[in-house]
Length: 424
Image (cartoon, rainbow, N blue to C red; front, side):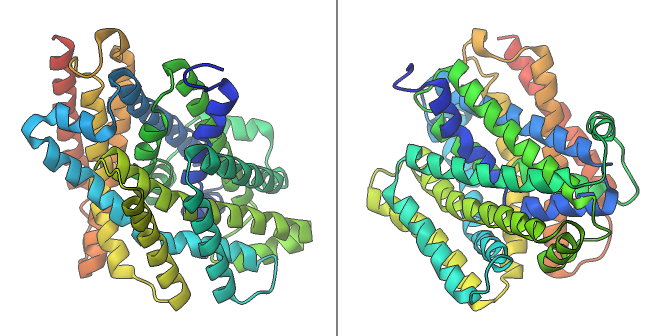
């Protein structure tokens, strides 16, 4: 054992919360749609999204480990007088997002359970909520991580089984993973694949659980966790290639039952349940970590009340059947701004000599990769803002060229900023 009791194995278990967090019902739906609509042609986007997720998570964890601060203090130090405002701008929308999307997480678990057993949805919704509350009430990152490890294992086995039954060769998979293609009308799916893999609250989770680790242990645990998450996403996409379209999980289950038997339905149900239940835990868990690491809440009961509020919000919408579409659209727009803001914070903080010493700062190539990732998340963020605002107010129109132009200008500005840091 090393670094405050951490070993390589325990580091992998600790970081499993990241893969569990980004494989939720949204990822399952997006990856299945990508496979059904475009077959293997968007597998490269899963590879890129996984690599981008790994880069941003590594940078966030590196800042915390090297500086010895938490994310809130690092942001305050980096931005000086504007630090308190920037901290609010980044963290508050993420907290709102945790609550807004919790209903979808719970209902995802319920949908998976419904494929396996005929039980009233209200009972399952209540049971899932109480089980998530019991796990979170016990507290402790290690306990939550062990639960996440088990759920990731279930997802891995289930979706790997479905992927094996797809009619594609290893050569086709390797080519699709390595050679980018951009089929007509696929832009929104590519952005969705990246956006569902790189989520703001995952970065806060990663920065919080990295506390007390060494850089080598962090990188081992993080790399294995993110790669497993990327593999599961790829397996879901491969499973989707067996479909002509993806409309509902019930229709998908019927297809698998017809083509590969009842075992296909069981694997889909288990995978979807594990994806929903893991995200139903990690959303409130992320809220509690943000409260501690960004807003420096010390009172255990205040933190518990916060994650309970997130969980109860999801339960209330889930049990009522009411779809909070306007709220979700508004939060989606806010989170669309948060991800690029957070990426910009990480990009500039990791190059700031007052936070990260020169020996631990990224080199030219790594900074180039960071700028590329920043450009992609900025495109995703502005696209989500555009979609959220137009959906909220029912505005027509296509502003993609404006989004691209703004993104290029902001990325250039970020590049100049880190160049200046490099000369200090």
